Structures are given as structure tokens and as C-alpha cells.
Image (tube, rainbow, N blue to C red):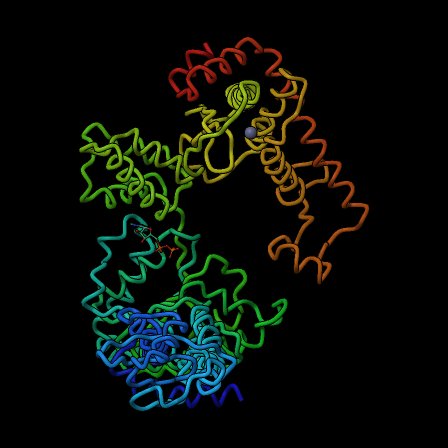
Length: 620
Ligand code: ADP
Ligand code: ZN
């Protein structure tokens, strides 16, 4: 049944596809008109019955009306419902209201007044009372309003009832796609590989004549924010072809069959506009290995995935549509997707290295007044682990900071603050007692001092007891250089450094705070990896956790633990051994250099933030 829906909807959308590729919203216009007519109607009724008449009417009590009738002063009376409109002989008109329980005649009788007292006519109009109109209107409209609301919600969730089968792909026309490879900094290897695709989209004929098989699908693999979308847009921009962008999750609906209908529609549109480029963001949302899904939406995904595969297989030598998909979990993809003739090109986009970061920062600094003292290289060095998106965010935040303080240029301090903001969140005012502050100061000083005394650690860049995001303080040790590998020595140093905060708390206050929980969690995670994945414990070079990839769900269901209960407890005790040793080491360092620890903590309490150079002085 659902399939049928898809087909009929597709027919509609086929007609539309020439006009616009943007999400068509027939229902929303309809509902808006309907909604406004409805509101207008209610408003009009209320206005005409209450406001309009009441506003300029002279309303008098019924007793006055009765005495006026008695005095023969009344010409005409119009009765509508309980309302009386009284026209006096002298021409004045006023309103009054009778008791609702009795009729007009009864009222006259009760007051011993004869009808003949009224000179003209007594018009009895059918009661035009507000409740009589509003109540049925509301009882009719209320369910409608609720339905409308539900439709709206469904639309909000991405499921426009009236346009099921249409793909939600956004079309970026040639004119919109001004992005070219020039806008993508770094990632030169990827660009080089992709140039071939650009060339094919530009002159498909050249390749066809030689009978070359051009890849239909290219998989861009990389973490979030490394510029996969940007790169895909740049390909379209370079080749000057239309670019259809859709996120994998956008295929997923609550109704089975919608996803595949959308996929069909998307490919149809792209083929109609060829040469063109389809970009599917987060392909893993649909392309996960089949049979691995947990819970609902699983059939739907399979159908959508099949449809995409069918479409790609249906490309013939004359089709010049290229599908680019992005994912950060290539290992999760269904093997059918990566078969030849489908997404057989895999291009890995790494996190930007020093040179790339410098280039990305420079690209995003264009158009912003940057202080001449800012050394981009220094900032690039300080932002190891930042993705392209983080860097863009940082430069933007820095500009906002400068603007907020009415400065003409963006300074290094702005960039520094922005980098912290991107990684840790904004500064936050807290109401801590002096004792609490002291604890935080010692905690952070503990991290810093252990880091400085353990081997292979990066120098301390900054320590602060200014609360940010969820943390009360931070110690930042940005890597001095990009690291592509880690040694056991360094991992142990890292664990000791993470535990340095807790060690300082114990040493100085003989107390523990929950502030150390995150440190402990991270350190434990690292220690466990050392044992189960890196083979760095007495348990030898063995992987003890084959299912780690799929998280707890899969592990729970397939009970994929590939070692015995006995081994599990050995792993636990190895992890504990590492942690205990690291903690002892941290405490030993702090004890040995207690005076320096005190100095750092006091400097923090005095200045809140201690930077690298000042810190070095304290150490000496
Ligand atoms: P992804 O698709 O990999 O999650 P995006 O392509 O959406 O990442 O990147 C987000 C933003 O980060 C881009 O709009 C761009 O401004 C910035 N960015 C990322 N990588 C680069 C890069 N190599 N050069 C310039 N800007 C980049
Ligand atoms: Zn800590």
C-alpha cells in the first residue's frame, strides 16, 4: 500500500520537477488560507455581534425601558434573543437586555403593560445570540484545528503529508554554487583525485568516446566538519553543473516506502538535469549493513538502500550523473554499496594538519579586519584537533568578540578566547565560596604540574579557574605538533595528568570532589583501550573487544564479547593496575613539588587564568 502511495505521488512530482526542485508545499498554502479564513470568520462574528454594536450603542437597564414604555414614549421595539433595541418617539435608540428566562410578552404581562403602549411595531427577530453561533462553529472547527496541528507537526518532522514521494533534495543551481576548489583549503590529495570527476562532468563526451568507465559513486570519508559537503559543492561548482544535496536521514520517514519513492524521485530529477551531481550526506543513515539494525525503521532503510542501488545500477554509459556520498563510518556501510559500479571510489578526508589549518583559518579570515600582530601559524599550531568547521567557527566567534567590545580589529586574544569557546563553551559566572574556588584551583594546578613533570607531555598553554560550559576550570595542553601515533609512555603520562586533579584534591584537602569524574572517566577509557585494543598490558598483544565498534546495543544483543568471564575480570584488574599506578605517580609528583603546586594554585586564585609564560616562571 505504501508503495502505491509512492507511485502516485511520484507522478505529481514528475510534473513539478521541471518547475522547481525545492520542497513544494501545497498543503501549507492551503492550510494557511484555510486558517486565515477561519480566524477572520470568527473574528468577524465576534466583532459584529459584540464589539461593533456595543461600541457605539447606548445601553440602558431594562427597568428604564419598562418605565419608558409605561410613559408611552416608545415607538418601536426590536427583540432579538434577549436583546431589545428600543426606538423612542423622539428618535433616540438604545439597547437593553431582558431576563433570558421569559419572553418579551411575558415580561410586559409581568409588569402589567399592554402591548398597545408601544406605538409602532414590535419586531421579534430570531435570536442572534453569540453562543448559538460560536458553539457549533467551534465544535466544527476544533477537530479541524487539531488535524491541522497534527499535519503541521508531521510536516515539521519532515513528512509533508501531501508530498510523500518527493525527494527533499535541495537544488543548488549553477548560479548558486559559486564554491570552487579555491574555497576549500588544504586536502590537496582529495582535490587531485576529484579533479577527474570534475573533468568528466565538464566533458562527458571525451571519456565516453574512449569507452572509459567513470565512477558512478564516490564516497567521501571523514569526521564531521572536515569539509566533505564543501568539497562536494566545490566539485559541482568547478564543473558548473547542478548539485542536488540530500541528507541520508531525510529519506527516512515513518511510513515505509516513502524513502524509496524519494530516492527514485531524486535520481529522476538529477537525470533530467544531467550532467549533474547528487550529494548524499550521512550515507550511513541509510547504508548501514543490512540485518544490523535494531528496532524500527529498518525495513524502510533497506528499501531505500535497494532503491538507491537500483538507480545507480540503472545508469548507462550515457548517464552523466555522479553520486557523491559522505560518511564518517565507512566500516558500517553495507558491502553492496561499495561494490564496483557503485560507491567504488573512496576518498578519505583527514582532519586538517598544521598547514591545512593555517590555510583554512586564512580563508575564513578573508573579509574580517584582523590585527596585524596576529600570526596565523601560531593559531594553527594551537588548534590541533580542530576540524575545518571548528576553525571557521573560531574565526567567526573571534570577530563577534571584537565587535561586541567595539574594537576595530580581531586580535590574537580574541582568537584565543574563541578557540576556548569552541572547545569548552562560553565563560560562565558561578557563585562559588572561596573554599570551593580553592579546591578548583588546586585541582587544575594538579593537572598542570603533573603534565609538566611527566615524560613526553606537551607544555602547559593555559590554566584557568574560570568556569566554562560544564567545567569549573581547565588546563589546556595543546599538542605542540600534529601527532600521528602515540606511545605507551605518552598514554601513561596522559592518564597520570588526568588524575593529577584528583591527586591534588586529596593531597591538599584530604577530600574528593565530583569535579574529577570526567577526568576519571576519560582516563579509565584510555586505560581500558590500552589493555583491550593496544595490547599494552601483561595480557599481551591481543584484541579483547572485537565488537567495540557497534556500541553497547549490538554487544548486548549478539553478546559479541569474544572473551571469557575469567578474561573479563583479568582485563578489569589490568585496567585497575594502570590506573592505580598512574594515580600513585601523580600523587608522588605533587608531593615532591608541593611548594610549586601551592604557588600555581595561589597564582590561579589571584589571577584566575595563568598563561604559559607566567606558568613557566612559577615552575622554575
Ligand atoms: P562535513 O560535510 O565534512 O561535515 P562541511 O563541509 O559541512 O563538513 O564543513 C563545514 C564548514 O567548515 C564549511 O562550510 C566550511 O566553512 C568549513 N570548512 C571545513 N573544511 C574546510 C576547508 N578545508 N577549507 C575551508 N573551509 C572548510
Ligand atoms: Zn580535572
